[in-house]
Length: 326
Ligand SMILES: Cc1cc2nc3c(=O)[nH]c(=O)nc-3n(C[C@H](O)[C@H](O)[C@H](O)COP(=O)(O)OP(=O)(O)OC[C@H]3O[C@@H](n4cnc5c(N)ncnc54)[C@H](O)[C@@H]3O)c2cc1C
Ligand code: SF4
Image 1: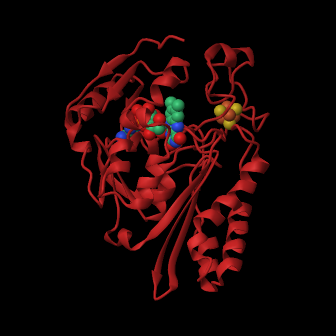
Image 2 (image 1 turned 180 degrees about the vertical axis):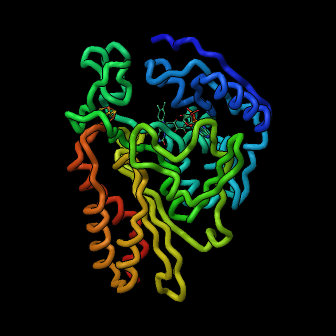
């Protein structure tokens, strides 16, 4: 498994990076951003949708800021999980990613923009050739999707990153920049329900940072994930929950899932219905069941969809344990 050749660009500021982007776009050359490289480079080794140019963000110092309301895209997950400035919910989610070795290289931007995964896709080139490829990396064959067969217009590969649900529960905003300018949106609006496009990033656009509202510290919460191995692994299902209490009453409750569909999903309707008439353990049970019903995993990760859905209920219950007696 040899990494195919590519030209590596190493800008040391965002302006430099955008000058490189403009040159590549003008020359109609494809490229990828690389941050920690813990996902992109293994994918390149497996010859998964490789590009001729890779732009590294490693030297762009302006993406490294970390404080309680601002998380730069190049902040390493290890630093995020260890910092006292980080919200405890985000700290827990960051600490659950992979292993300490990987977290020392892995970044926030790379985690949020993680490529979607599927057991028909995350395989060596020889393996994929032996099954005549699939739509997400069809090598010019027009191959169909193997999960939803007889079509090659939709990829349902699974979003298996850990950070987004906690950030979404804390009402984070995501900041993007490109040679055409900057924009900002709720994290909830960043993801696209398609395993190939994944998110709303335009060609040449990148994530610069995440911001949290000042009142994020009023929320407490939990993140629970199902993995194949306890030591380190991608979430087969993940649930984050955050709530704000006022005089023993739940004022706000947010729940978000990951590892189950092509996007992380906020379950606002289910949470709002539950707090409108909260009744301790009974409400936890009802809410866990309504989150289970809302998600529709497909058969493309290690555990089967039925088990993953069943575990959504268990994970939601575990997250909401502190609310059982309210
Ligand atoms: C053994 C192993 C176990 C893992 N376990 C987990 C796990 O448990 N949970 C989990 O969430 N992940 C896991 N991962 C995946 C990965 O390590 C992490 O998600 C990591 O945070 C990715 O960050 P990175 O900086 O290395 O991304 P990179 O590999 O550099 O990039 C990933 C993708 O994001 C894009 N990108 C990077 N930065 C930006 C930016 N600022 N703007 C726009 N696009 C950008 C890249 O172009 C690429 O498409 C695992 C990986 C391995 C190898
Ligand atoms: S969901 Fe379909 S198109 Fe997407 S990676 Fe899996 S098999 Fe390929």
